[in-house]
Length: 88
Image (tube, rainbow, N blue to C red; front, side):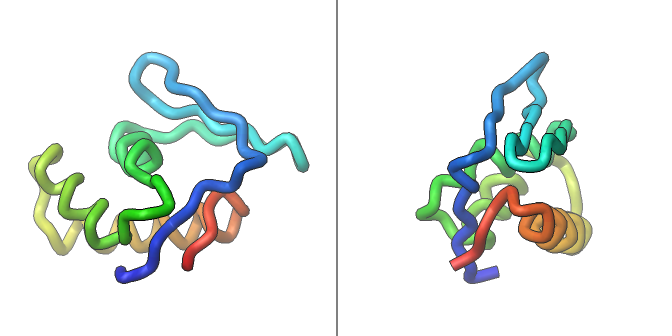
């Protein structure tokens, strides 16, 4: 949770109706993020740690910390596996 996520610069993205839509032009894969995923994506700036982003999300959403931690860990690993973000 101390890792700092950075967006892949090749990813084309925008918000549509409050949710992030991401396109990887390298392989043509498309991703639509739900509201929590979109909020996470919006907060990824290459400076904040996952823990800092998690704290911001907890202020936005009425959810138990343990539940959000588990969901965000899975989400981050999935995004990293798909080449959408890198961790440093």
